[in-house]
Length: 336
Image (cartoon, rainbow, N blue to C red; front, side, top):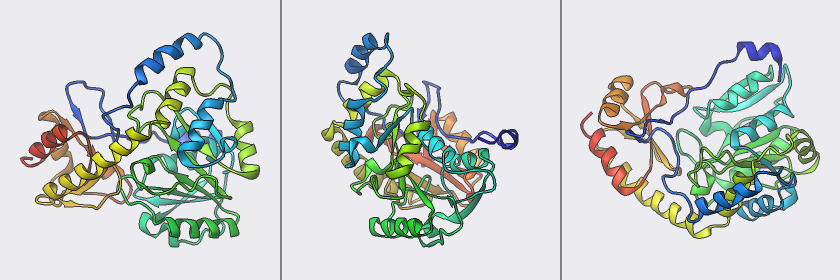
């Protein structure tokens, strides 16, 4: 991290509310968690009196099965964002350029700027057609946040091949890929994949994730990773969650069904972007975004002001939650 660049950087706004009286649609987190999570967490507390096994064999085995790669290619991290920082910090230096999509997750640009490097922005739906030459890294968010578009798997692999030819690393953030049936690109040469347990498994406070890499980059990440960087309860709950195939499948079905129902209802008042993710991006037209967000909150519902994303000036983003909760959102947005 470049010390001079840190002084010029800012924090990035995010969704999420800690108000228990507000129904939170501003953060894209599954409102349900796998069965048995509390029991696994409680049992792991007994082992938390000792340092964890820094090899994290059970966690890495579960992660490898989850994304279909080899266990030795998995690098545990305390959340997906920690993995992104590790990947950028071990590849990008002052004066480098990094190809980034927009609108997309604001932390990508922040991590690049913290390294003293320059973000080069490309429309998210044009990224896979962009020229990766002369960039240290190209970042893809799949599905993209906040639009919800998932990459065509064939086009993504073709772009990865072009990145390899250009000696440009492809960093694929797959935080929301588990909500789809698309294959992970984990284990592909020249690609670093970042995954998180935050979204699909509804555990943002646990801080568990991982990277997948190959070759020399795998060695770099393993060396630079902090020792014991994943707490014992997080590792235990993470391994348990990633092996719950029925939970993943039922979540995918619920989100797909509810997303379609919500999109149809919201399309009567807003221009709703098609999505493969557990959220929808709404163009509110001539309405004042801040006033809409405030009015919804007064009714007990938090929605995300999406004007904080580069390139958006009349948008809000809403998560897909349970059917009953989604009904409350639809009722509120039908009046504001």
